[in-house]
Image (cartoon, rainbow, N blue to C red; front, side):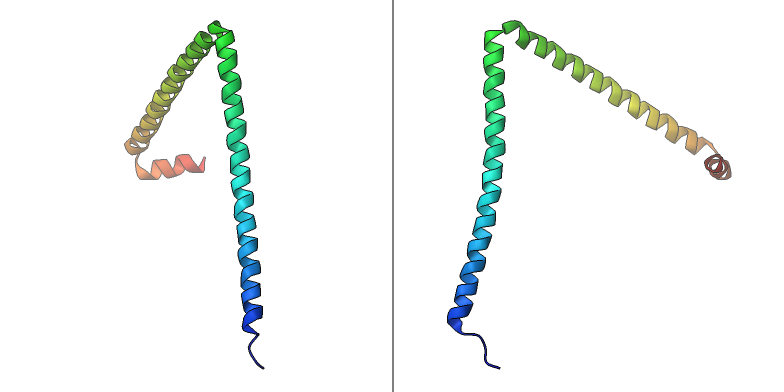
Length: 102
């Protein structure tokens, strides 16, 4: 059996390259659509904030409250993890296994 014609291989390579290029362009188009949607929402938010200045202040207060709450939850979570770790270290190994079995 003879190898395929070099022209046929070039044609197949060209088709593969075009197919890959098409996939890459589709991915880029999807990313551009996502960026366009984000930019549209950003513009909308800016218009809303400029037409209603109290909204911007409310958003800042809401963000501050969220960050404070998040910080408190993280602190409490870390304290809980530390307490659990100390409690496990304080138990004898066989007691810890028995507690898990319960």
